[in-house]
Image (cartoon, rainbow, N blue to C red; front, side, top):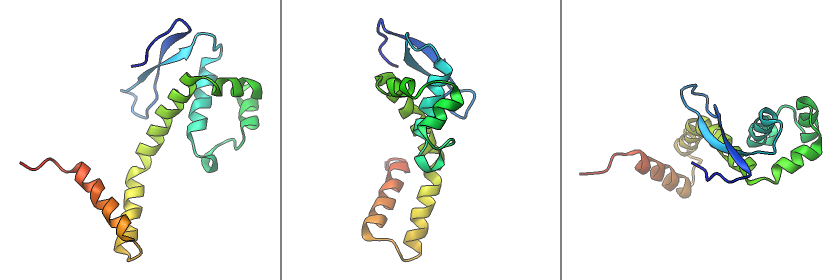
Length: 131
């Protein structure tokens, strides 16, 4: 999935709620605290209003690393690849609620023409192709 370099090694992490699925990604070899690295990526993928603990400082204290370590991890491209995996999962879980909210807005008479077009466009992506 990702190109391996001399500075990184592949590890497998269960990145999805389904225990039968895991995602292979690269973590830099010089990261000594891989579980904390992964936990920080998961925490960063959560919108700020849902994060526990609320601040990066509190998160660093909770997992037993310095804020400087977290800042260093955020400079690594592998970190942001991992955040992207967790963010995609977070969004996937909420998509039906967002679509339902959009539908409610439209059917409640508060939707705009753009809302209707967007909703219908989503439906087109889900329909099987016409024969």
